[in-house]
View (cartoon, rainbow, N blue to C red):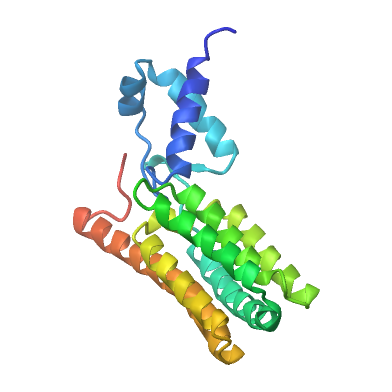
Length: 232
């Protein structure tokens, strides 16, 4: 096989860093440092960024330059609010029929999530998170509710977002909340309490991400107090 083209090398590097959260939404992609890191001219880096722009992972504005596509805060807010409702209700509906084997499977997935915390990979953690909740939903007897849950999950994928990329510290809390939820289900407490716990679990992630976004905006205002748009 031949050598990987330089523009492809740059594309892979930038895309990987976007996906793993190294380059967060709004991060300015300055050509020269990236080119220097890869030992190439800025031309292939520019080609890579144009490719990422076509994929809507990067935006380009005059007097600003290239930056990672901004976090779609309103869409994320609405999706997470909806998921909190439908996931909470799906969990409540499933609870009476959840078996000890399903609880054991969910607990095993949560333990794998706990083990990832030492060397945190937000994408892998998110995959396990979906697997955990999928086990809890297996016994839900309302296909329309399940369809709404899956639609919400798919919408989150379209947002190109793992919440835990933004707030990795939230992952520790999430694992503990999973264990609490399993304990409630195992003790067969009132389903309304389980629904509330599942809903609050999702909303806690939403709150953590929105707080992080507010902190980023505040930090940017402190760095650029006299600039409405910062040049790259």
